[in-house]
Amino acid sequence: MTFHRAMVGMSAPWWKRPTRGQASVVYEFVILSDSSRSAEKFMHGIKVLMAKNYIDNLAEEVSKGLREKAEQGMWPSFAPLGYRNVSVEDGRRGIEPDPERAPLIAQLFEWYSTGDYSLKGVAQKAQQAGITFRKSGGPLPTPTIHKILRHRIYTGEFSWKGRIYPGKYEPIISKDLFERVQDVLDGRG
Image (cartoon, rainbow, N blue to C red):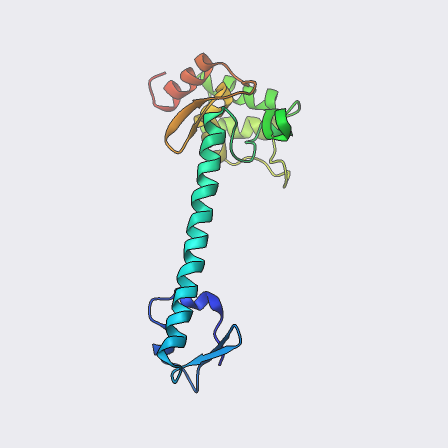
């Protein structure tokens, strides 16, 4: 029986796990098994730790890059519904309102701000208006409508990792409309 490298991350060392028959791993042309020398197991462990460190460092660098992008006012992820990803200054990626969907997203906020519609009612109106997901073309379910209505990004500022950043992109709705919708959602409107 041969083990995959991904099994190294399991709780017990692979050579101490109960198996049927003999267990061995071919790793960089060295066969590790119950009878492997301690130096071979030690070197294998060192290489696993180095790989883990590389992955952790990569994650830190990606997180740092996304935070820096947010600090520069650039949305650091895939564009939400109503926006589209575009190339901006210096070849970097940013967002801009989607000419087809942005007016429809603004309409969702207008409908809900009146207090005349429930989230389900707004979802039904959205389906009638033809607001769909970009990729699947499917209708927006009620939880997605709720998420959109809570998403500050449509005002020209956004929340990233618990902080609010001013965005360098065109807002779809006013901050006043956003606040009115939040009041209705919170039962204050």
